[in-house]
Length: 497
Ligand code: NAD
Image 1 (tube, rainbow, N blue to C red):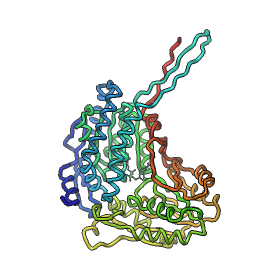
Image 2 (tube, helix red, strand yellow):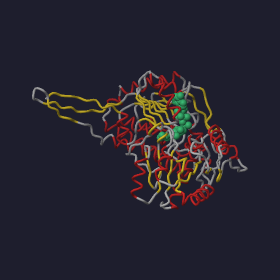
Image 3 (cartoon, protein in one colour):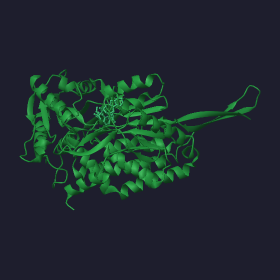
Image 4 (cartoon, rainbow, N blue to C red):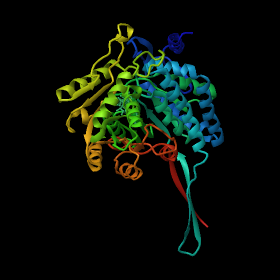
């Protein structure tokens, strides 16, 4: 079968994307269109969950918490989660086709990152839960005897998971897997732009025998739709969210009345710093990859690059050459490494920044517009990879998250100046530093106000490490034991001896 027809076949097999409540796909709800970003066509329809469907999902999750899932031995829970990972592997091509149909991302990216990491998340947290200790303290008591304190981990309860569209399966399972490993039950609301792999995951949960009500899926939008119904629901104990900072603020307000636990992975305006002593080719290649991977739609991608003045011109020329060498195309075309943006709306936003940069006085080194193909892709959501120089540090294009394939490059003369500019942002998600000076690498990494700093690399992720943002880029940390700490509550038991 030709690659494009694999995508079509997968979409057809999925049919209408339904909500999944209490172990069953349910009919009902207003249908909404899901677009193929490559050509702008409608490739599927999903059913928007109304308040009653969200209510049913939360009630089912509550019942499962108090039922078989709550009573299940940890070893059995781990076995089931490992089966979920295995089943994603077995249905790899379907997941791949569904992710590509929703996002238009290059086949190579989805097959090497999105889908394998979706499966890996279940394996990592099935293992993590088996290997996490709890604390124990022996204390003296006033009567000369002793008491023993030990902690137990209890699940939080019903967890609402709200996820974005840029790495749909990967970011959703990053939260579903540890939540379930800790014994919680979940109601998941994937992005309205990318509902397909979440629907396939629901089917996998059913196939492998995850008990009814443990995993529930509701489709729809944010305000006055499934997202808001879920975050306001009194039966939800905690909310874990990945998305824009502004949405995080809205969810925080919705969660306030119920005093719900929150974990937020939000936006960024990440810096990259390149010192003159860096391995030049590795730095240009590394930064180009970081800026343009997934068409710049990665929360960790740098949009502000600071380059030491002696190599500035050469670096900008190198970045331009890399941007212009990207192969923009259909997901399955040979060598495609640059796809469309997710939606017409997001393209309007990115193009508005392209226009604003010119108004703000940028030099457009390359890009700044829309590629023309002369075929069906002209109906899709493509933009050109873009590099700017010459903007003031307080320009809106240097301050605001664009979430597109674009960066601004600024020269610097001193290390402290670079660090100060890099940290001059309301965000604090990620940074990437390029240098061969070991002392400087440690010094600058430590000075970064960012939840994660990469030195001479980017996006190398060890899933056991803490992950999250400082400042307006998030609240809390997930990853490894940090995820387990969020998705469970330690309770202390004190025994007088
Ligand atoms: P978004 O905030 O628009 O939407 C994310 C999810 O929230 C979607 O499912 C959406 O339907 C839902 N939502 C929107 N309004 C809501 C409301 N009022 N109540 C409840 N739910 C609501 O984000 P997006 O455009 O899908 O994703 C891009 C953003 O996500 C960028 O800002 C990016 O930096 C951020 N992001 C952060 C990380 C991270 O780990 N920090 C990872 C990926 C993406």
